[in-house]
Length: 329
Image (cartoon, rainbow, N blue to C red; front, side, top):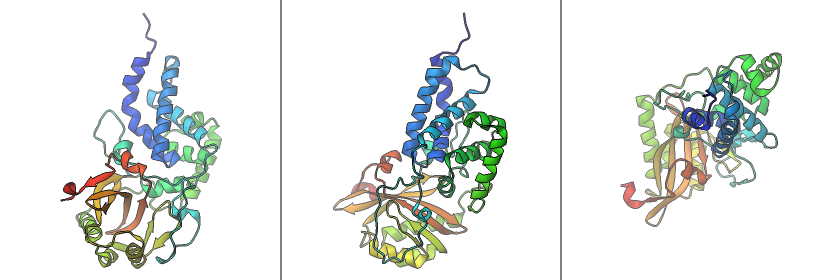
């Protein structure tokens, strides 16, 4: 008899870690679709090599090492995934023409359910909302891949420097140097990793209700009171971004295809540990998929909206392409 691990053991022990590994790959890649592919590759590599797994580290640590290496390899020839604000251009007026760029590999939101945010399974580590928020993921994409990996492993997963050095194939001294540079680049990011994400207040929940009502009733003027004075609105694959509640309201009035009450339907979803909505646009008697909006609060007002027009995200969020009229009542 032998205690050598089997492939059946691997599938049983490793499967509960799938969501946290997807969150890890998503932080690295900035794309939920890329993350799903790389988690699959991670499991395939681990399954093939499991008979040689000697147990010198935990299975979780071993899987994270494979996932990190897989992500770094994938990032060798890939550009960063920005939001429009990350392109370096100033904000636009609402009247500026919309310019679409489908060649840019844009940042994507991730459904909370896929990343394990708020999960209740005690057998797995729950992904923290702080580590998956949209602003942080956007900032991470501006770090070189090796810096990104080191910062995530040290500051998100709380690995020791020696563990990180083994995972990324370098020395402890190099890890400490890389981490210092990565932290310096992110020092101006707000919120930071150390800022807790608090549950929504009663006032914030009420404001979300007003946000939905304003869009569904086409009360564009009512939007102005919902945003902070320096709120940002951006909507990849359009390269422009917009700042200020009046500009956002005017953009909605002039560029959104909705023209009257009932043209839009907002369905609550959860993305990046933040409130989010799937928007459907009415065509005849049917509402068709339009965009996924991820909202960030600043105090009791909305400080940022990322409106994502990648249509494949609806399937990723488990949403239908069409929302029948009877479902909207």
